[in-house]
Image (cartoon, rainbow, N blue to C red; front, side, top):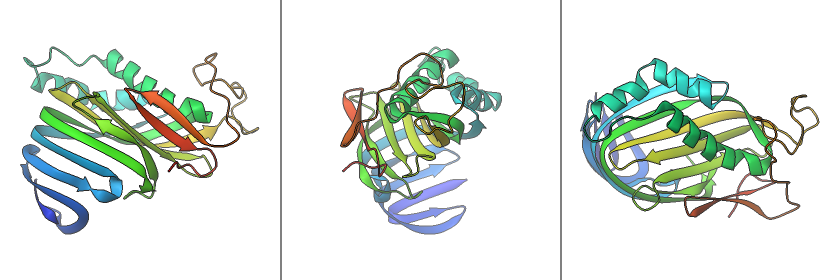
Length: 242
């Protein structure tokens, strides 16, 4: 498997593609280097990376089962073993806590519950510096994402977009440790807890974990979540925030 980026042109073993991006780099079997602006449809992003990467695909009913499906493929262990010496281990429970916390901060203000999760995770062993901002325009998957990334200064990435019907969400969560980094792109079926047809064992104003109060919906304006020194904002009706 190989991939070469020359400005907007991407050449790989899958063929030639032209995208709204400006990258320069090469990758062979997951090892390589890249610098550039990335896909402009996915926000304003700038970064540089040197190292090797590996991608895994998983699915589940919640964060626990999603991560277990990744672990079953050897994702967490393999990434840890390859980084041995630079990082002692990537603890599954710690990853679970971080992922659950970030997704909870996104879902809770909107009174949403994840019903199913599918997506991919890319583990990168190496040095990367990224900064980015998603401002609400439609991305390459058709979601209007808002959020920010800053692997060097902030140590995390969080972007999300929800449909107007509040039944589907795309979330991007990045966990950066300096040497071993992971980036999750998740597509979720979600349940609106303010809907009278919500699960009978969960009342509006509570999370699926039970007992933790969700923020009440506001009449207007944006819902903003403060995490890692940046805000993730949503507009209740449109699923976007300018």
